[in-house]
Image 1 (cartoon, one colour):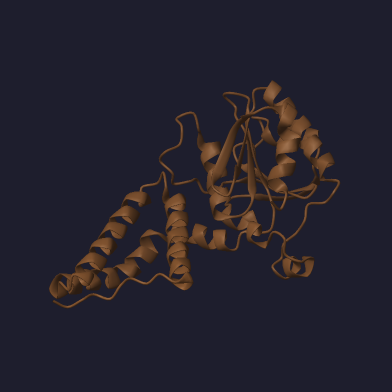
Image 2: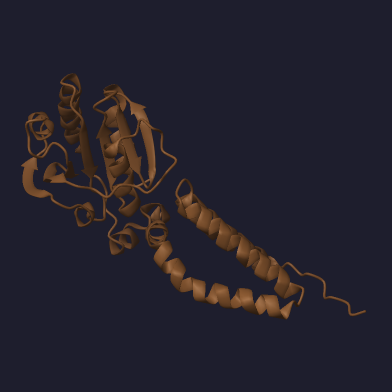
Length: 264
């Protein structure tokens, strides 16, 4: 009987296992709630079976599964195109630079919100509160590092100071731009009437309409923060990095915006 060598787990082997586990968890988190999760779990199951039959020296079955996995890499790049994009965005996320020296952050284009940004948030809140009183909905994209305009279509270029009156004018039902999103960069509205990509998630609550799905979609494809005023409930939602926080009121909106736009 041939003795199998004892399994040795050194620090590098433990680090290897933890790294693979972290990557798999992030991939699962990105695909959770979408149709892609079933494909991801199916491929993971095939890979685990391949490892088992290879360890048991079942050469023919291992060869078949190995060929399937090898050819399947190209198919994965097509099927998981959106998820891979999100994963790469996660790797380059601002949070990975927390604590880095300012010159390192500058190299990677990391910016800091101006200290007087609260004046812009207050004007935005006042405008949205007026929209809420009038029963209007709204969708705004707050730019951080990446340009969300690259993912929006049909937008109209603007260059205007953020003011409560302008916010109301943009989202009045008589406005030709009210169905689209407006983008805020620092204290300026740079474009309006943009059509945003909607999320592919299938686990969202039924009360989430097109604006909420578009807010999630732009937060999945860029590092922007999306703000939604619900026309039905009159409450606010913030989407960031593919996650959405709902049922906020105007009293805490400025504080939530400050937190969402911070580098943390």
